[in-house]
Length: 458
Image (cartoon, rainbow, N blue to C red; front, top):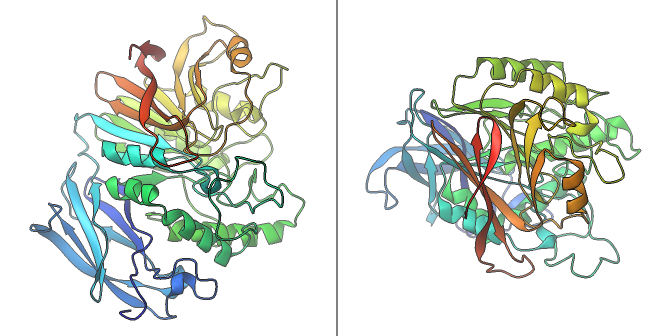
């Protein structure tokens, strides 16, 4: 390794926090975009030392060990650390030979009986070519307890032969669309080389969900949606999920084309996070698949935390467009699935979504056409980090959907603070992404009262 160069070019990360543990991640890649050898690494297992401390200077190391970085997993590491104190901040780093990684900050989930407030941020849709990840740098500065990433971590697209002006701010490592494991690995490496993304990973533990672009645009279930054969698509999906796992701090490895993404992460008595996969199990009129839906409804019924936060990738509330149509690629395309979830909505339901590259805030109702319908919860939809927004007639959409309370067209992320008494969401936005250094501001603030949105003064 000493002759290969600095191996921690892709940064460090942590994720999947539990009250007593967390996953620590890095990937050895002295030559991240090497087209012949993944990361420019030798084809052998490399032993990596890791440390976890109570302070950034590592004067109080609490655990240390070694882990094997294997070539079949692109020399990525997913170190499961256990035996930690709940609700506690820790710092970690890796080393190989004389090379030492950057230092990362992580934090365990609170104890089951904790009533301490929870600060989390969520983001999605970070297309590299469309701009700089400045919003993620501002997110990192908040040092939240946990970050939720709701999909489109990468975009698989190749570069068009004649790109529209202004759409391609930063060049990719390849002009071809990702279809193979090698291509997906290089695309993730390109993203991870970004200093703002590295900062966001190093600032807090993440809980991540894929949407469609981690594999292919608008894929659903076992079907590619582009006319290619199902068998070829499943091979591609297996490659995409492997690369996704190799570059994120996940607890579960993929098995061929399958990756278990839905899971429950409790944060004391304040929040039950329920992460749902809205891509992998779609079929017919069913968004979640029978097994996942049964799991989710059981979790909703059994949740005891003050806030039940359903984190998923796409627009959940009804959003009727001015011409009367609904989106087939969101929950509007699966109204029966949505109705079953809402029929089991507990008090304190908060749905998080992304995908649409704009900010929205919605009240959730059993009858979308009746403003007097009983409130069942709220939805906060976050904009993109960089991905260009669509042309949106926001005024017409708001007029046609009285349960939608807010629209904003900037890029950014959403910062949330929850306690036993209240829930607050701040829409944090940047004014531009075509160059680095954009300042951050707050476009709107909402609180939740009696399962309804309330807009707060800035």
